[in-house]
Structures are given as C-alpha cells and as structure tokens.
Image 1 (cartoon, rainbow, N blue to C red):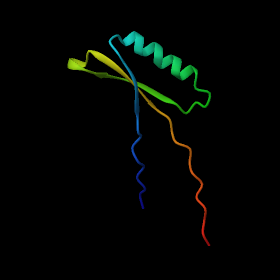
Image 2: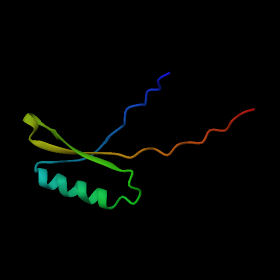
Image 3: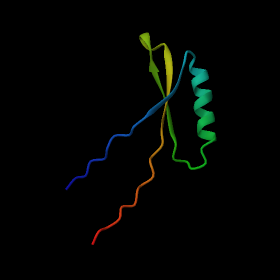
Image 4: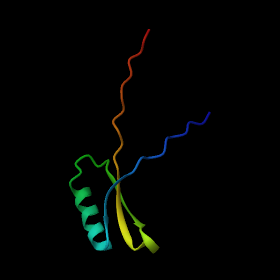
Length: 69
C-alpha cells in the first residue's frame, strides 16, 4: 500500500527586481521563524526571468479528529 502526500501549497509573499533584495527578505523571514518549520524559496518570474518571487510554505497543524464509537 502506498500513501501519497498532498503537494505543498506555497504562498507568494513578494516580488523583487533584484535578487539581493529577495535574498535579504528570505533571510529575515527565516530568522524570525521560531518554530523552524517555515520554508522559503526564491523563484525567477516575469519576462525572461528578470524578477524574483519569494514563496513560503508553513505546514498546517494537524487536526485531531474525534473518533465516534
């Protein structure tokens, strides 16, 4: 039996024209995360990949379901 995980839902935080600006914000976001669960990545976007998009992913807390008996 194989269980497939759902793909991560990344959220766009901001778009920058300069990679260094995006990198600075990425480092700031990661340093302010106390849980260590936040993931941040920088992706190229725009015409010919001239802009830089910051995307974040934070896992949603697991919900405890009530068992009916």
